[in-house]
Image 1 (tube, helix red, strand yellow):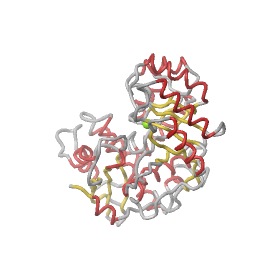
Image 2: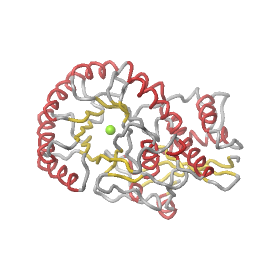
Image 3: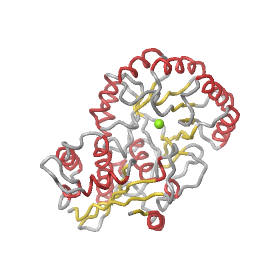
Image 4: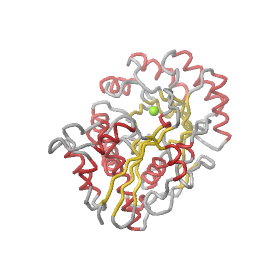
Length: 373
Ligand SMILES: [Mg+2]
């Protein structure tokens, strides 16, 4: 089998607002082959940049365009192709956007591998330990304790047993943060996991104060309270509190995650399969986490291409853990209708797709409507 084209599809809502919702745009990659099999992948990041990285001319041996590196290659050789892309983009790559682009390609290659074998990706990853994955509802933190409690109650009544409240004004007023967490805990009771996601960059001493205050509310984890590069801060914070500290949605490659675990000493890492390096790299990141005794709970806040990928990845992990499941109220066709059979949470669980490859197919009508140049 040979790769005949690497197509990039930039989709976006007609109006993209600067709010804490990165599901308003997406860059899809479709890899075409001479046998008619097409693999789909997603880079969950800035679409225009990823398009350029894939379609770019080659400007030197180790600064090549990804598309040109893949044309004519055998798509089934996923590990070799990952290394080829990593090595021959190493002057402008190795971390960040280039790894996001490699993630989308790698996802599409695994989709092809599964379709060629007639098997779901989770089977190719070693086998499924479960057919459904428990999900935590991922929402934005409301402004007031009353609204926070009400939202938490609603999530619980929909059958979820865990929820993460993130971003917005969290981290700016510690007393207000604690009031909202208290209201959430009161609304859901004790047998419910509550996670808090600051989203970025508190000063470490304030983060320690917040973590100490959260200890009274049995928080499952505190996510991204510090800058992703403040590894010394993460180590100090993790040492100072019993609340597990989670981070990693902006991190890429096993090298970045090894640093987070060894220098940052975090309790939970959160690679995003559509950013950290695809299945090929996330398997290695998972192995490192297992060796270090660090929990891995992937980041997943995007459309159903990433949700399907994350489900396959989690189904093939012996350790049972949560799928992050975005539960924003507003209708968004990218998030809710990107594939023909959307992945829904029922009683707090999401079924792992059973078809070959990722087991989801693009809803071409939605793609056509939202495609941008
Ligand atoms: Mg987050």
